[in-house]
Image (cartoon, rainbow, N blue to C red; front, top):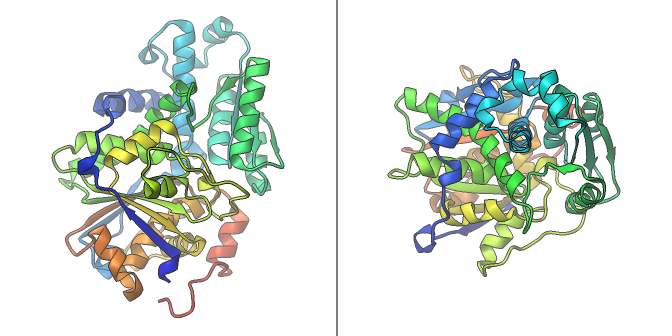
Length: 406
């Protein structure tokens, strides 16, 4: 069992801290104002799982359910829409506060902008968010997906009018191909990872994700609750860094312990933290994890600086941990609310559930500093975006727990 869990401790007291000025509460207010101007906006639920917390021996367990976001079944649209909004604001010489949804989709703005083409690479959710935003703005979108991507996710992107196809490349190769086309054709690259020379749009995407964290923060604050632990899943690290950075900013005097979770077939953040040599470490090859949204091999340069400064723990885990989390959330204890969570959304709950109940993981539980006084916050970042795979896991039991696991 323990070989499925690899952990790196990060002593943040020895780190020079990255600036959080671009992820603070003022930014959160801006992003929330922008997103709430959309007709489709509604705050997603922050679900308190009282019975599960009691069963696991925790003081509290809260899960932010992003399956309701804008009717798109995932949180990713928050980043893509805000980045596109910021791009348009900059192009028009305006502040984004002057460009609410109805202004953005107006004929006047379309006339000023002319025809734009946004291009991106995705495992599904980010690309759908970009395609949806382009559709709202009556602009064009091109979306590429890596090999192994679900046909269902491809068709949902195409349903928003985007040109989309699955390429015979892994995620990072697709990103480079998209960027090459953007440079050749004058398209606007809207990618949720960053590299040297491409950091402005990824920064805006990270800021867009802060809406999700801010909603959770305001809900917890109204209840007089502060999380002691936050578990965040990572692909390139954009979302994890955005949420980690925001909470580190608003809870600077009582900062939660942050644990970053990745699939062991695509654990570039974990490898970078483990090496601790000042370099980013990449994962290459197919990265054929069921956590498609996390199947990324190259850390976001901006995101890594935040995680290196503020995240205390990094975990690399096997696919069946995510499957376990999907089953736990989809089959709640009596009195708890059901959460439909996809592979990438459920892995953090899977980790918390297993670490709190399995003798083999007692050492990791101690390393994570989890006990009966812990108040845990997780983010279920997607619903059943791959419907067939969701049913195969939750109904048909693929990716079962190992023999002897409870």
